[in-house]
Image 1 (cartoon, one colour):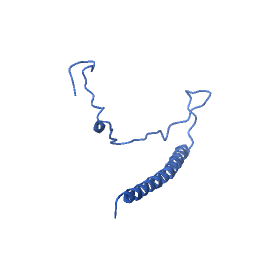
Image 2 (cartoon, rainbow, N blue to C red):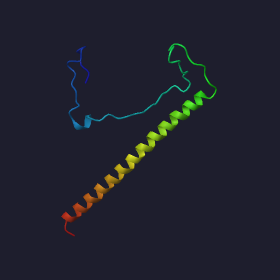
Image 3 (cartoon, one colour):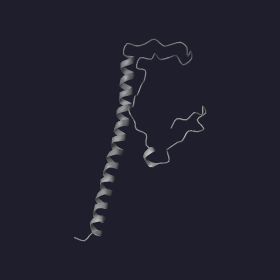
Image 4 (cartoon, rainbow, N blue to C red):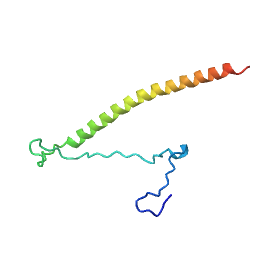
Length: 101
């Protein structure tokens, strides 16, 4: 709700209700420099000469890191999915025991 106070002191926040405590993610973006020249460690303002295949090697290294991270995430996601499935099955079995046939 927008109010006339310039400092926002009259703003009414509705974040205490459960339905207003979610943030929808519309998009995710990753940016990195693929052709950024490497710099000399002793002279920070002086770029090192670029090698012909340096951008390709840098991209390959970055892709390898991303693949490793995704593989780790998939491993945990697999275990999480199996755990949730087990809990659902146990819940169904417990619910069936409580109801007469």
